[in-house]
Length: 312
Image (cartoon, rainbow, N blue to C red; front, side, top):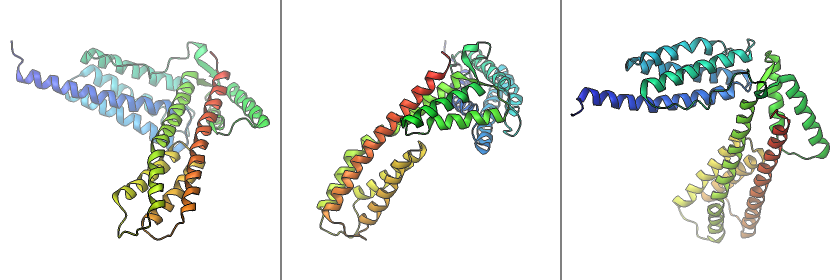
């Protein structure tokens, strides 16, 4: 028996809704993970707004498809978002857990309504299991101890521990007495992925950058306009600069800013550069990549030190 056109159209709409719902939920949970790490006030408000918009979009789309359970579960989550959206008000762990539980109900309603299993791995566990929580004050004391050891031994050269200390201090100021260990681990995992991703991008661009520097070094012909390849490398260095900024790799950012300015001037033929200067730049490029590799290793070492003080 053939499928009625209206049924086929409804099925197509539901499939599109499922895709959108998965994207919204991903955005919601990423924002929620960061929100629980006590970001600065303005960032806190932006993250809460992201969650609120995602839930509203989810409920509104469900309403247009008459998916009543999803609609109700979504809009029922809004009061829980409002409970955590003001960073100047004391926010308890229970407030976050209540929101997470309601998002779990949204997942369940979506699965029942669409027949698609929505992954709930991003929903943090409740604090019924003490092994998943650590007292904020205790966590801060342990972090300070690790930092003191590292400072005395001149071991680390990153700010991962310092970042976690600032977040723990802000949580204490807001009256949050316990930290979710799963959220801390997710922050560390995300930080590791970002470091590795940045290093990978730099390594991929390295041969191209060296090739262009060699072309410039050997080129004694002054063209009217820089080639598309030269214009392209200026844009790619700008992207490396932006990538370094996103992961807070300050030394790499300074290097790529300088390289970007240099290449911009050179490709526009506003500066005569001797061949030996290109050799020096290539040497600095190699040193910068080595510095980024050491920066990644240092970050990994700090994250391991933080993991060692977390309850297992």
